[in-house]
Amino acid sequence: MAGQINAFEMAQKQFDGVAKLLNLDPQISEVLRWPMREYSFRIPVRMDDGSLRVFQGYRVQHNDARGPNKGGIRFHPNETFDTVRALATWMTWKCAVADIPLGGGKGGIIVDPSSITTPEKERLCRGWVQNMWKNIGPRQDVPAPDVGTTPQMMGWMMDEYSRMVGQYTPGVFTGKPLGGGGSEGRTEATGYGVIYTVREAMKHLKMDPSQSVAALEGFGNVSQYAAIGFVEMLGGKIACVSCWDRNDKTSYTYSHKDGVSPRFLLTIVDQYGTIDQKKAKEAGYIIEDGEKWIEKECDVLIPAAIEGHVNGDTVKRMSGRVKIVAEGANGPCTPEADDYFKKNGIFNIPDFLCNAGGVTTSYFESVQNDMNFYWTKHEVLERLDTKMTQAFNAVLQMSEKEKVYMRDAAYMVAIDRVVKAMQLRGWI
Ligand code: NAD
Image 1 (cartoon, rainbow, N blue to C red):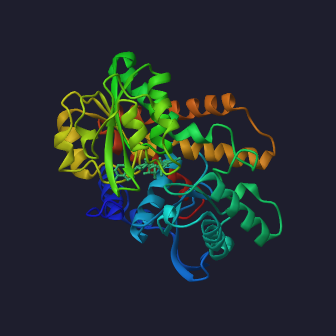
Image 2: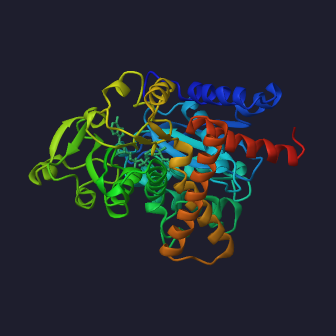
Image 3: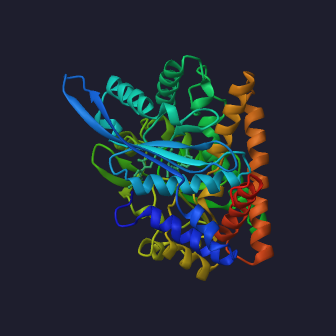
């Protein structure tokens, strides 16, 4: 996580604010402020050199009133229990706002995935499943990839789970590789989903997408396809992208006098989202400090890297031209940044709405696994567009009806749906 920000305190603070707006019974709030179940465990892994290393693993299941828990597994050196709690909580709201019949979960391991070899990674993935297999499953909790994890890792994890339970169970993990139970369109889903919501926001704000410029933080899975979608679907221009350089252990912003070409950068970025500096320079890219991305002249800001980077300090450096902040990452904007957006009339597309394309397509993946019948990429993306557009418009309507900020409106839609499910099940 970002360092100074406790993500879970932020998630609770956001929830408390909306619970107040909704006049939610404090006893119901007490159920929803905390995860229902939490798992913390140690994973011993035999390393390639014969030594034994022990990794810290987590899984948090926040609320499953609307269906099995759903959420990614992060491999990150700064992972904490509180980060996982926050992300699990946001997943409950995300699935509810996207109106898919799933609850919220999240997992993680404290590890820098680029510091271990492929066989070590496989053993670590299998170790995570050996600890958790009794508490996950297609009808219990369905993990997926997140920062630092890949489709291949989901393939290993699904295989380990299938071994443990004694039957092929593709629906236990989503984000699996194509040909190994994965869905067409999953790679593009989160980034394209971000752009479907940006497109709807632009319609609402009467902006011309073809005249618009975006600045993005990060150049991993979400940012890559958000950038491609911004250029290819909306006809807009990209001012810059940024990334964490895992060799230099510092972040950089990449821009180009003719606008960034995301398709080109895709050819020189590694699997962890680090852009090859030498090749970028050769192609005329300007490389600046990692925080510069937020200062670029643009209409749309898409933080799609890590939480807490748009905060009380950095938000003031934003260009006065910004009209939309589309949260590709989870929790990229702090409550102080929210205050700034409200004061300055900046339209915010909150994370659990904006980046719900990934989980929606994960849901499509498990539906296809259940049917053992697979859709084309076109079918997947068309269904995704429909779902994201409906979700965006439900939140916009709530925001206009209740005269509240988009994040609050998204929480209202989501909390309403979760409370209703708990009531219908007789939990409250
Ligand atoms: P990724 O690992 O593919 O890429 C992360 C990118 O962020 C990389 O380019 C990395 O270099 C960059 N980055 C990391 N630290 C940085 C820093 N300090 N400054 C600048 N750049 C930095 O991850 P991803 O899958 O693209 O996920 C990004 C965010 O989106 C996360 O918050 C994740 O939880 C969220 N998210 C991802 C998905 C998904 O389907 N991948 C879905 C929903 C939400």
